[in-house]
Length: 233
Image 1 (cartoon, helix red, strand yellow):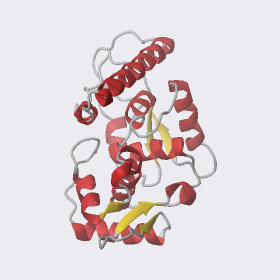
Image 2 (tube, one colour):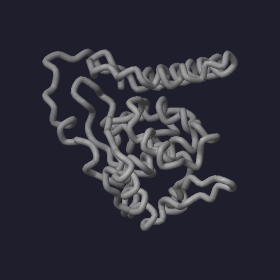
Image 3 (cartoon, one colour):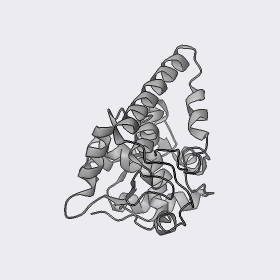
Image 4 (tube, one colour):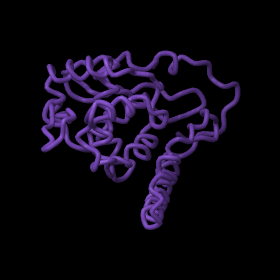
């Protein structure tokens, strides 16, 4: 399996993300890639890459056949595109899930479904879990499952293309809260997540019809709540 550095993960993640969310601006120029790597929304951690750092990551990704140059007729600016599906031998659903984990770190199935759906529709929460289990299986798993965060009952998932990208052990070993609410039935969690996904689709439809597409980016900028006994995921 391909192994990536943290810088390669960020650059590759941005290329995949922008290919799905802003297709009109893809393939990407170096300047656009730097901006995408350093944006504050949908990123953890927030970084401050310069052009040299992004170029080094691009060159390394080219050697691994994950990135190629894109010829733009009449343009003097070099542009780049990813070759992730072929290089990693994954489908679109698997790719956007891996991308979400590279850009934001460990997440629950519900969080992945809500956030990665801005790139590609992922279906029900059960379909997302099945995809994650598929990525976690085999001789070279691309995803690893680890215990719930303190105060939560939902397992979390982390990508394995760069295992040290996010501080997993720190999250897993954090002290538990002194008191916890009664466990929430899994069926109820699934119903709540499905309802949230449908509500997001309604918001997306209304935003696009009103020409207010930037409202979706603002929604994703809202920081996640700290886990508590009342938060199912």
